[in-house]
Length: 198
Image (tube, rainbow, N blue to C red; front, side):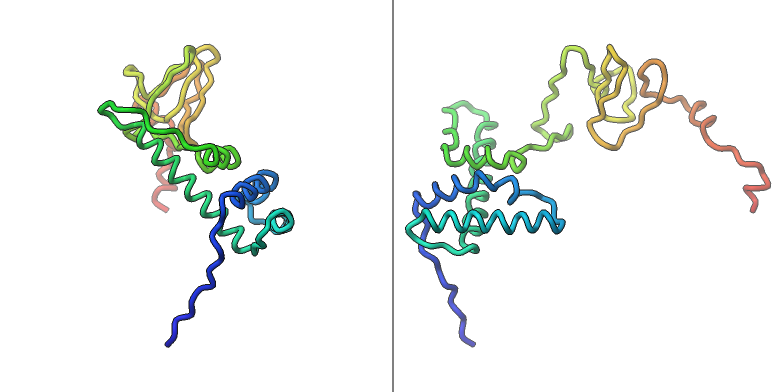
């Protein structure tokens, strides 16, 4: 069985990459939209078509739509790798010079798709840093209460700002995060003996 060779396109020159980045700035919000409904998909097809037509008008070498999409994937991948390496190098200890900042092309792509580069915060990561504001108290840092949810309590307004969607708030006049065993028992529904035996 013969292997079919893939038809290789010519390598991208730096001027082509610069032009492509400039054209993508106008359409990136549509192209990078995570929705997959019919209207969004039609808008994405139109956006790619606009980029392709404008790119082929302004560029000396004609490129196909698949080549443009592949180049966009490559640019995003290189950017993510560069930013990840940079952030990793910043956190190293032991002195030495600061790592070089990412170049302007990388920073342009980061500006175009900032949601791709947001970092998730997790209290259980080794690099998590708590930065309390002047009027909030982090409940998990308090030694007086037992944590039953993760979040912040605003002391002035007695409002709870949850950090995750999974939390339990005990409604009372003052913020409280503990429930005694007697209170838990009284909250349970008591069934008559006849309903229990059925």
